[in-house]
Length: 259
Image 1 (cartoon, rainbow, N blue to C red):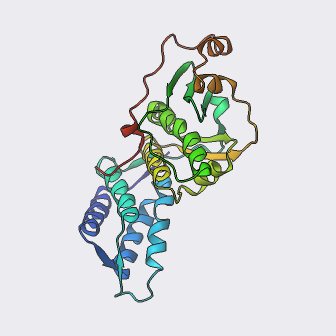
Image 2 (cartoon, rainbow, N blue to C red):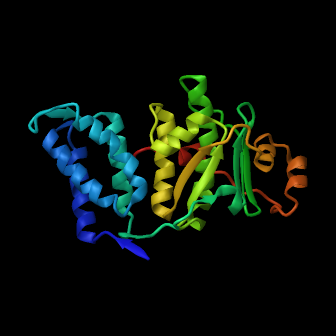
Image 3 (tube, helix red, strand yellow):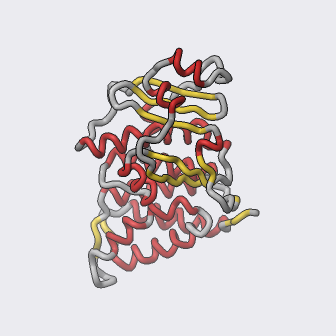
C-alpha cells in the first residue's frame, strides 16, 4: 500500500519554504500558511511531524497575524531539512508495518563506549571505529551520553536504512535522555539536533520509523564488544560476521547541516 503527495503540492510546499528561507522574519500569518502546507505533507511523510513543533512554538510567541517572528538558526535548519528532502522525493511513501519490530529481532545492535568508540551490527554486517578527534563538544555529561548513544544508531541508519523500508523499529536504550529525544524527535542540544535531523532524513528517505524504550542495563554484548574495539571477543560472539567491516561514514556525513 502506498501514500502519495501530488507533485504540484510538493512544488508548492518547496516554493513556499524557499520564500520563507529568503527572509529574516515573517508574519504569524505566513507561519500559519507554512504550517498548513507542512501538516498536509506529514500525512504522508510521518517522520517530519517532529519538525513542525518548533515552528508552532515560534508562531505562538506572537498573538496577532500581522506581527513578525524572527526566523532563527534552529527554525531555518528545520526548513532546510524539509527543503532538502522534498527536492529529492518522488511523492510516494509505503505504509508502515502495523507492529513494532525490536531491533534485536532484526539482528540489529548498536552501542557506544564513552571513552573508546562506537559500533553496530546488522545481519552479519558490522562497523566500529574510535570517536573522531573533531567530535563536537557537548554542553554537559547528560547531553554527552545521549549524543554518544544516538550516534551509532544514526550511522546504522545511514549505512543500512535502505533495507528497513516499512519497518517501525524499536531500539532499547539504557540512557533515558536518548529515549526521550527519539520520542520527541528534538533536543535543546544543537549537536544532538544535527543527529536527529540526519536520522529523520534517513527515515523519510528510506521510509522507516524509529522508536525507543528505556531498558536499564540492557544486554548488548555484540555491539558492546565492537564499541570497545574488542575484536577477538566480537569474533567469538558473532562467528558468522562478515570478514571485513562496513566503512563508517565521515563525521560530516552523520551530523546533518544545511547544504
